[in-house]
Length: 340
Image (cartoon, rainbow, N blue to C red; front, side, top):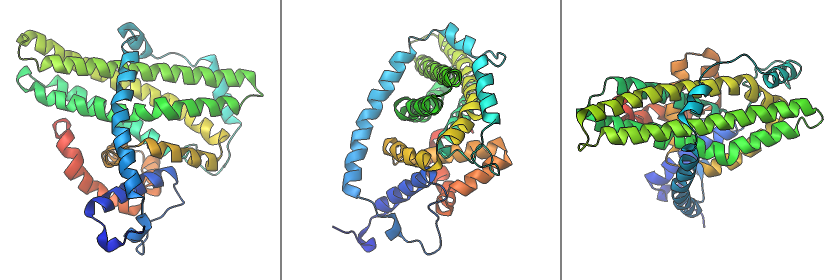
């Protein structure tokens, strides 16, 4: 059965635009919005999409619980030790040497050889939100702790868990498999990539543990049965752990951009990277994607990196970029206004 444009509801068109946005994230350069593009181009199987949304909503709570249960087994000492910097290890040196000898397209930058930009920008968005949460907590009093909890829910339950849903089930396993399989003839380099991915996975678990602690302390801060001093201590702990969270995610971004992003660009073909992103799209929440896109935009522009901003302009189509101010005003700011 075909659906005529005239019969489509506003909801269907919004969902179509959302799908289009994430499809362009997955396949930059292949889809371009022009003035002749109509809603007919954005046609989707709406009935099957509705069923998929219901399945994903149920799965999200399950994945969230599994990650947090694993995270609670990580000690605070292990987390804080991961925040300290150390000289480049042997595996980092091996990877850097390998990258110095490999470049698929000499005229492009390492970031341009990588075609899963949404993951990078989402990680930057989490680091930014954690830093904003720390600032909010540092000026919060027990009598307005409920607002702090709302911010914690957004940063941890929405932003962090949205990122981890993709990383834990799809992206990290795929990246590790591609990096180790692509270097099977070089055992030392293969081991180096395996160590780098194991370290990154440990950091992800530590991030989840910090998020879990932030949520628990935010709940205590709102407990009117607790003494005011205990609630104040809980708020101070939210500020401390939010700062740790931001620092750890920034550390992960540094490793990813220095070692793993250029390695994927050098080893995995453009076609295969984009094909993998099709699987990622199946895991993304259709309605949540608008909020995530606004967060990515805010993180990229706040970073003030001209190369990153140009890449965002290149990857995200005009129709989606024009929608960002509206999505920010109608959807994003009502959930994040307290961190502005």
